[in-house]
Image 1: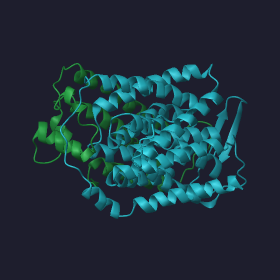
Image 2: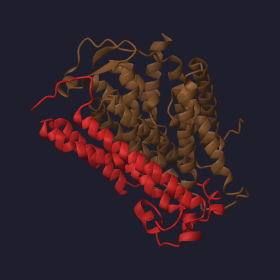
Image 3: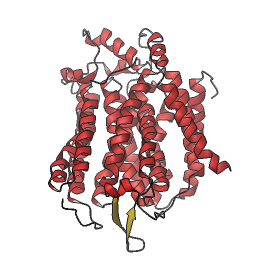
Image 4: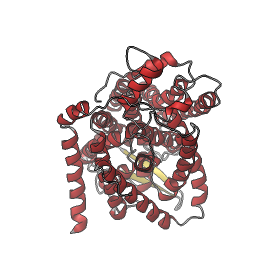
Length: 325
Length: 148
């Protein structure tokens, strides 16, 4: 009963976000609430924050790999919740963090034929368009509203990580008409069994429609969207898990590109934040891959869920103006 | 229309896309290291002094832009869109070049696969690829501006 209700509740929450955030009242509230620039007030040496960012994102990169999540989903709630950077810059940087991870992994995944360009192109067209809309809406909303919605979304991701199942090779009795027309199908070599696995997808219209919401949320919060891409590609559309994970990673290079441009053009990119963050995440990911061979993924996954839960509550309370911790 | 036989190997378009993406990513990352070194080691002077930037990044982006414009740039418009190109000689703004490369390489990937898709008669995917390139180019153009 609870498991049946969860997707409905999640869908209701996503719909509520779209309905709330697309309300033009917020744009006016944002304009009205724009404060006059305040003079700089910082006694910290200039090099301290980039070094702290480098160290924190290095650890984050390790945890992200071990926990099986993207860097962006950890970066935005943690950095916006516990660091002095404004959410506008954190979201812009978060998108670039997710983008750089996708760019680093994408070519290899495409060459190995694990990421499917044929599956990605129609999905990316929808998701990247909506990511632009999400980014524009997110930048027009008052910060506290975005922070509250971010907190709610992060806690929703925690619920997904708790409950979502995975299917190595889902049973797809028959491809739907749209995926047949677009010839979204393929073969991948499963190294563990030595078999070539034929795959096809179904429920394509429903899957594509879901990417309207996923793209919107990715652009709005600067989170990347692997947490949502994989369940939709795997459980809803029936792509094998490895194809779903690889295609999702590659997809971020397109979805996050479109939103990143909006943030960049609005001035939300500060090199002193962006470069240490990208270097930290990348170095952490390299180390994480090596630790993965000896680590216990189940424990790490629980740790990631706990960190995200903590960061989600922090974002929520920060948005509500409650100084909880 | 010539439909390629489905095999476990990546298609020609997929490989072409992957190769361009890989080159763009490598160029962007290497440049990022170089330009950031030029910035933090003071080899190129910054438009906004390194010691001052931490006083601004806790503000909403609009306030940040107004403040750095009033205090350092003194332009008659805010430094948004592609106006960073005018500051390319400054250590902080030169870092936008690798960021733009990393964000822009996907457009080139899409445009590169279009001729092959048309050649094989795969019109639906060719049109989708063109549409994606147009959308990404529109996002990159800076024409889409809203808020704050």
